[in-house]
Length: 250
Image (cartoon, rainbow, N blue to C red; front, top):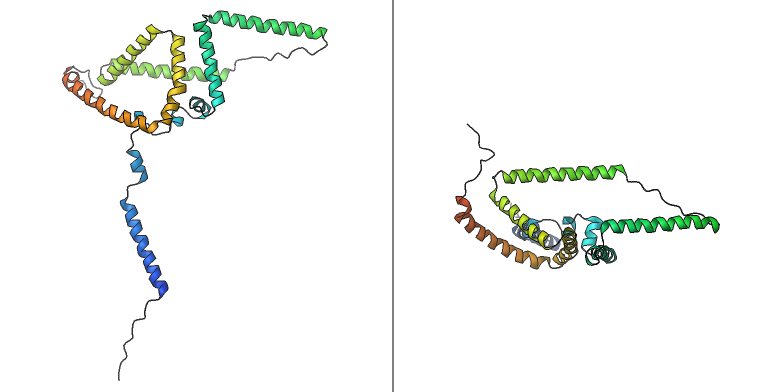
């Protein structure tokens, strides 16, 4: 009895298309696995001061950051113009703070007094003078935050003065020396105005030319590290250090 062998059925067109699609998906997934993740590429990008947040977030976000970055040009111009006017009033025209406060109070009280008395003769309602009070909550919060920052600064100065971190000690001395030079060149109000103008110009320019500034900062940081390594090997390593925190006394 002759046995007939079953012939294999030819694959249909749909099965061939499905097989090709499956092969293409598997190969594409393998190639995607070989590619570096976008986050890893992004982490390799050098950012100034090692920041990992946008400039808007670094400045605190909200309306203050919008003012510094000129997101609201009208408000930023008003704030900068007001501060410039106050600085010119005290520095250019040499107006004194106590004199300004007294003159403003004299003008305000005189206008309100004349208005209140004139309203009785003119049969008009007297001016509604609002009751001004300083709330207790914000003052206590500000005092608490200020006390915390002062204590933290004093603790940092104590740690630096203990002689454990020579690099931080030199950075603080250099910063104080720079501030002393600035203080001898201008008074506190002018220094505050310069810092305020820098806050309104440097962040917005940095945000605009962020990539170029970061590239230049990376090169400068590499060069500074090289110079510091040479200085550390020749000078700092020969200076005796203070006792370490984890050193146990016998």
